[in-house]
Image 1 (tube, rainbow, N blue to C red):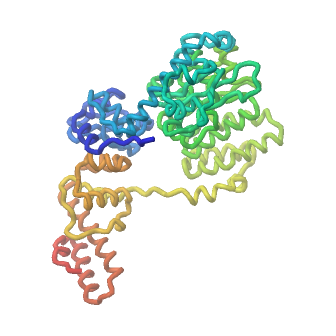
Image 2: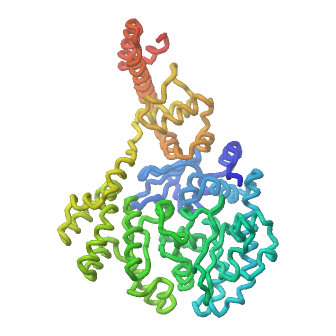
Image 3: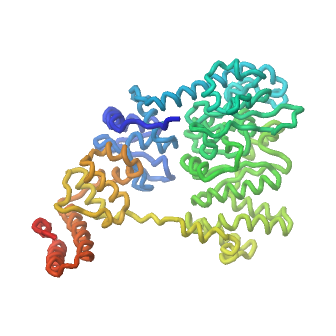
Length: 542
């Protein structure tokens, strides 16, 4: 299968034709302030606007959380979609056609065949009407999720190529019908394309209850949340995400009006899922089964969010119930519980009163590794947790560390992100905006910021300083580029920044130089640069 790529030239052309104010104002309310526009940042909570959009430079920047970039970057981050999908979304808004490669056409064809198959199965929904009625799934909800039934012999009736059917998991590599006589649940990508299927066994069968399409070039379980597409509008509007365990939990909750619920793909929540949810909310809701396994799932899932510095809210489910059963039996109670979630730690403390000593010990030991990781991701929340655990259970930090065997490894693996030095920002601004490379060659190793080193090397080697081109090549540097072009600098500051960078380069060369005469020349030049004399390097022959 081909990968999804868009020519850099098209990205440049697209960014040159769209108006960033028009794009962003479709998502948030912008207020004009002088030549720029401002708003409350959609990517972090704030009371005073620090989010700025520059129509002149076609960029945005939040001076609160640091996020920034162009129109494509904004859509990518706001909707939490891939760069490719963001380019397509911006192009769609602008009415510009996106060029596609042969591999891309093939992937899009498979998605179209996926939808065609889903509609075929949906057309046979009458054969499972009694089952759906028993589960209180009405016609509107069934249509919303395109639920259906796979009759025997569907492989020939679908009318799609064998290659596409295999890629979608509808038939096995050996040609066997994978989902025959099962209830069919199409799996939508977050962008609304049918990329896989799940099949639920009906009554009277000894086969596995659920089976899923195998992973493919389109379908990755760890990156897909079931129900996200159907919940997308509500999630974007209200910044709320309710995470449950299964397909029918999501379906029943939507039928009951809780239409911001999603579920992992038949597996436990993963770090990728957490990163997706984190983009949309800082207060995720967890609602799992009301039994021992459900409690463990809450602790594990909350722990993954704690690792990211986020405290989850828990929607407690009565013992012996699950979101699906509760939605069918008592939808009003369900809504009341969803509207009154409790902080994870409060839930944990409350639960401790219902457990015996052995169960409590097991739950606390399960929580310990995640709580210690919180010390790195959110020290303030960690201190609050530790204080409450100490008061309630007499737990000290050493106890948490003792029951966190992976903490040392996790901390060792975590790479500290250092702030970009101000003088490096000013230097890069000068290079990007004025196109003035230093009078001598610089090693990228002299920069403390990897992003600055990356952009400088690109400009030096490719000879291209166009902002759109750089961002298309390195999307991750968009926040930095947005910040530097919005900076106001004086000639004196630019000269001082250049002198400091040049001085670091000469100091690097001095450490490696063995010739005494050349060492002397380098030292003289370094002293002159310290006084702001840029000419010191122009006659340097070392």
